[in-house]
Length: 257
Image (cartoon, rainbow, N blue to C red):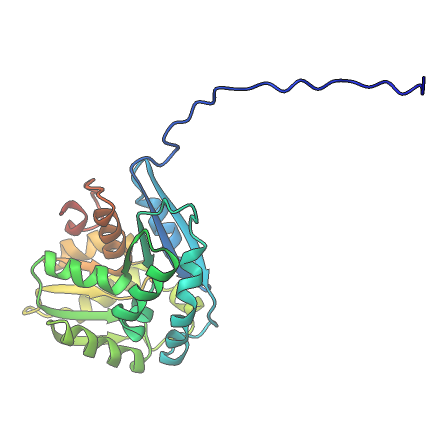
């Protein structure tokens, strides 16, 4: 006898019950800028029950320039690959308006597909273009927080997509950390100041702006459709995932299919 007592461990076999989890209606992944402080809150605010939203971030300095945005292209595939690697993601979106138009939709979608091949790929500018077409707006005015160099790229991009940009006005902010602090009541007044009677829609560009807080007010005051970056992106991603819920209070777009 060694004085050491031995005990036996009995293993049991369980009949495990699985269900569809918390997000049976769909799962959407967003690739954000590392500096982003607005998109995630907006997405969570408008998330319908049963829809999962998942986030990852791409490195960028606190400087939104053509050069810093273009550098995002090489990061997108790896970022997308980190979103639900079990393959259950339905939609993956690059959540940056200026970044997606500087890089270009074709390159953005290709990189996202590399990282998440089982998901539908989209981008913020893709959602905006789809939204503008859905509300039958061809003649636009555009309000942005961007530098002039980014605004010039945006005007060219929208015109190449078939829109007439009657005016585009920016706040000449470079830092994302400044863009997120622009007061919503200022955004409302700024957007309305850019409007023209002949414009068929107002587009407020940039996911960092808290435009979602006032898009309904702007639309009521202008009497025409208002497309804001995060509103359009969320609508686009939900519809791509087959989610047809109508969301009231954030502009007419979110009640359309």
